[in-house]
Length: 204
Image (cartoon, rainbow, N blue to C red; front, side, top):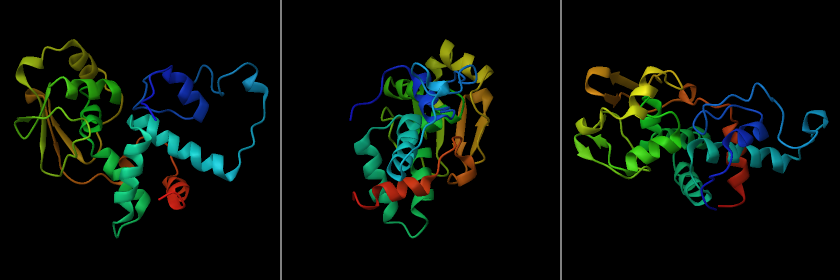
């Protein structure tokens, strides 16, 4: 399944929750699903659809496709820790997400573009792979010639989210550090990861 490139607020309205990684725009003005007369309808979801919705929340918020999510789930299942927690941790560790959480970009798609265009260094080395997995102790820095980038500076002045507990930030050096592995409280979206695990239970 290809990466979504359509209207982003529409997706947040469909799921009835904010997807901070996908868009900064609020759904408060229209807190109901898209579509004519949607605010007057009563929706009843099957158990399958509930699981599907939770899975899709992760896909859209972290900007990954179905194949990538499936691979992360396969890896999470091999852990001795709770599968859902490990899955969320693996997604939080993606470089594009870390760049977003440090406040260098307003959304995950914007952070992915910064990484892909070579603006980001990890431990002093240029890394242009958005799915690169950041480990505790590694430093993420905007390279010097990119520090005048208007997008980066505007976002640093008005970040989308607060800095999570697993990251530290040095504003003078445009540098952040992963201090520890992400925990459940660091995940910014409302999602039931156990339903995601159940969705894949018979598909892997």
